[in-house]
Length: 195
Image (cartoon, helix red, strand yellow):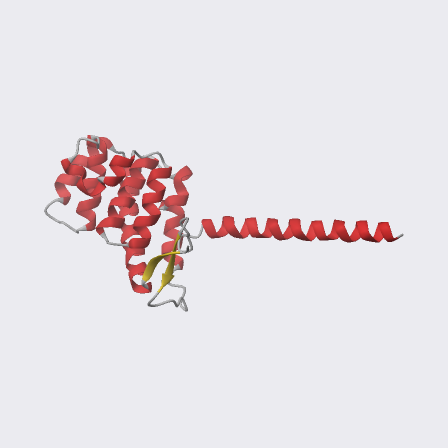
């Protein structure tokens, strides 16, 4: 009888441990899909400024991110590497530390050559980037700077290489980076080493 009780207790403990591990795995998967709650190896982020969300102001950019963000590659009409180059360029342009760490990591994980990642801000002075990639980045730049003088030429150039769905995705990737960079600035999202 004691062996039966012991066996039952061990079985229950294993089930509880397995359930706890499954719950933790699900939580980690959910958090990984949460754009504002990422960790990057030894680097994590803390909010030094504003940390509220009483009006749910984060809901709208989160919904846009579900359609045009880094976790939407399967549904994007734009090549994943080009989308990530646009995001990385915009991250650095907006001086967003969180965005830069996030999208440098994503760029490398999508297979973008490390030399391109390292030279993204100098893409126009580089033969590492194709004419198609430069067209996307020039368009993102014109949008980002709200450059009315460069937008007509950048639009004509991007139309040579991309269809309307791809162009709209470049637009939304650029605008989404602008939104997140400003939100993370307001929050004072600051990187630190966890170890």
